[in-house]
Image 1 (spheres, one colour):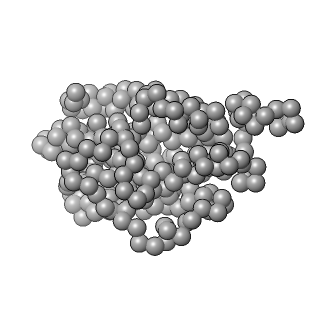
Image 2 (cartoon, one colour):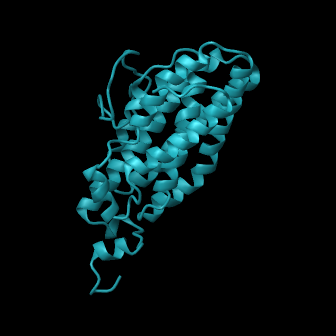
Image 3 (cartoon, helix red, strand yellow):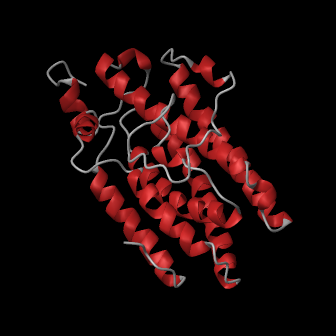
Length: 252
């Protein structure tokens, strides 16, 4: 970056920042918020899925579920290490946190944060049995794929590198979920469609509101490229194609 080029111009042209030492305060705040959302969502997702491992219908399914629980926690730890370089209070993750805490099933949180952490609102809702967990994993797995593709291009290079490294395993989690969903559909499991009706709108909310001012701020910093509504539309196309292939209805 030359003396004549401002940081905003540098980031707008695809520039990258590589260490906490050259990160200005406002950028640092947005970056830490983004990373906290990733870490808290991964830990909450891992904790929630851990509760249904023993509900899996066979040993192969239990192994797959246990792998997802383990690897999501590992992904959270990798992002947390980047946060630690900024002096973030990572000690709270070493103490007992209510990552498995959930609201009532019929609660309606919308896209806003809730409670004492930064997890996406979808991770506050409880899972009810194996079929419900599989459906949620499939729908959220597709959403994570879309969201990671966005964040992998973030202007803070150490975070982008971590996200590119974990993306293949996150795709594998979605694939494992889809294998389980196909098995449930083939078996005629009656819980599948009600779970889709429940989770589809809640996963959609994880993309945030359309016309977000925070997106505009993050875009100027090179942390984001595409607005919430574009990411959500991409996910809706992907999820809709999969559900249509399986003969499942899209609520709405």
